[in-house]
Image (cartoon, rainbow, N blue to C red; front, side, top):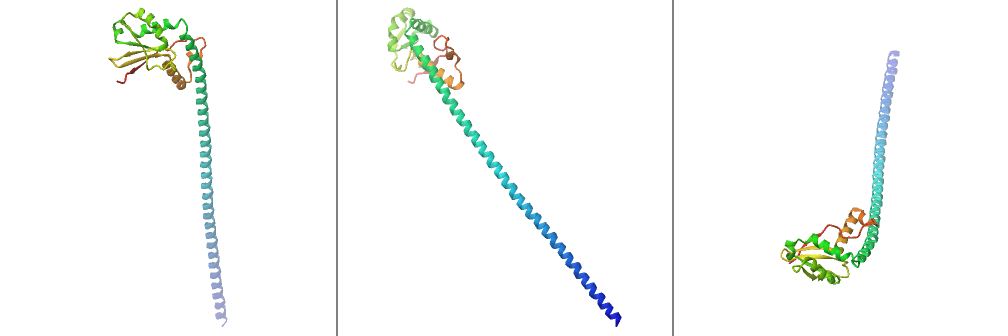
Length: 222
């Protein structure tokens, strides 16, 4: 009888021990699962925070880039405006000096010397000299230099309101116009100034006023 009772106690104890062991194991598994889930949640939250930080950084970069771009655009506009203002001041002054030049005694010799450079004796008859109405007063003096083959006419296309001086050469047979007017040269110089920042020949106050050596040749539209 005692042996039976002892066996029952041992059996009960074994069952309780097994239950406790299983309970402990289950508890450990639950805690491990909780820890794993917590770490997973932490990782997800950290990932969300990291993504938000990245988005904020990109937003700040775009904002800074836009601000710099706007500042650069404003600076360029200001620079172009100032360059235009400088060009207006310079070329207004040059225009005044050229108007004074065409009324001086040096203007007719300039016309004759420039014509000599542009015309050759063997091609003189091919070209017609076109002058401003105001400069037709020099027709006789020019004819005396170049002879009777020299053809001179008033240029109907030269607007006296915008033209300062100079001349154009017209070759109808070849369909060519050589523009030696001061207005054309001023326009070319102004364009070069606006494109290249500097126009040293005009900025230098001691520069002798006279047209540039470049000549514009155009094809006559027939």
